[in-house]
Length: 191
Ligand SMILES: [Zn+2]
Ligand SMILES: [Zn+2]
Image (cartoon, rainbow, N blue to C red):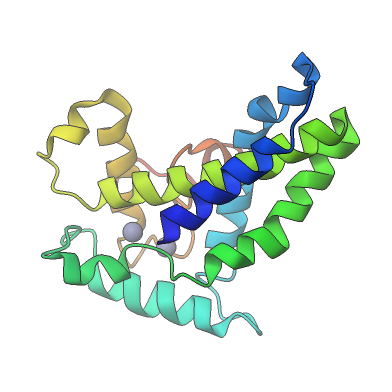
């Protein structure tokens, strides 16, 4: 369901693109940079600090997701636990109402209307990538998916974030730890 709404939205946005030029696709280049910093900021603040009116996000993430998974126990046991891995459904309309217009505006202002639609789609692509990589990061370390080089490194990056001593200040990125590197919040081992 979550993925269906995201993918349908991506398709709808891309369907608005007409007679594109190479400039229309420039959001594909900067979208991941915006995505990395957006995830860093959202994860660091409303998800790990009690900020009104986002108390529910803090409860769902810090008090439930992090309580269930620690750096020692990172793996879900059955599909019943998946609701603790994926974002709740309401976050998807929230992206389309709050995140997509920002992405659209960035694309439109930098490279025209087509780029606006591509940028809004890119944000949703980043959301899907986050959910997929996060899900894989909560698979066992010896799972086949972690033989893909960077996947094991991303899993370790996220596993360290689940250490209760590190979770509030380190390793907020999931798909691309660019913002953690730039902001000095990346750790590669327990202190
Ligand atoms: Zn996690
Ligand atoms: Zn977290």
